[in-house]
Image (cartoon, rainbow, N blue to C red; front, side, top):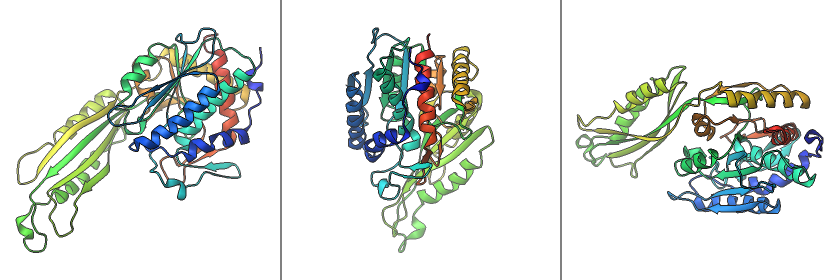
Length: 379
């Protein structure tokens, strides 16, 4: 059998293949843009000989793509490659963050989170197929459109598919030290609205009651609840159309992260306690989507980590494993107790910013890791 670590991986080739992936911008809320990205990936998977299904989106969000890779037992449960193709970058970000290489670094919107990792793990399958290597277990690929907003439309799809498989690989970007994730903290989202009383801001200011002012007070109160183990962040704040009007409605969104379910429950209780219809400005707090705690040290996941560390040693790098904040779809599969190895994608920095980039040498490194995992899981 061909040694998967000896396959002809080439960073320049991978960067060229990634060009249409990165230059097809795909922010979550732009359904047409996400579906254009799904078109690109559907084509690449079909070119590998996969049986590709396009799963229509719902809730106004994009489609998903599921691919059954060529295998003697294709369609059976085995290894699930799970990733998302939506990004946080609006269409037009390429003008500020063009896809480009500068020495050992390559920049681009969504390159680190997580198109780079998705592509690398597909390239590993491409090289294995070209070499005529059949993996011990069949591989299924599932790419989804809404991870960046908490996976409201595809959680059920992910969980149903994942339950069919023995191992789940999630090529989210590696941790800052290059390590993998073997557990994740809980995440909860909240939708907030304050409702006041409108008036003319110049002519009758005292007649109004500002929803913006009340929400602004709440921002400070909410973020002051943050501790090392349970954080609160106001990430969206929308209100007002006319500067000469006292705004009667203000909307905001809050993200909370907690290291344990008990801490998250406490955080949720604190947030829900902000509901108030007393006084002249009403505050309404509604629960949004939640990612459950993925408890670390589950035997199946730890066995996967041990294998990955053995492979990494053969390649020539160290691979740590730890719990992490920042939700992923691995929360769902790990919460279900399914063996899941997360954040095994490319190394880089600046995800979700206009400096998002990867380290080019991580492409071949992670492709070798992927190929060996495909060949040794279930062997």
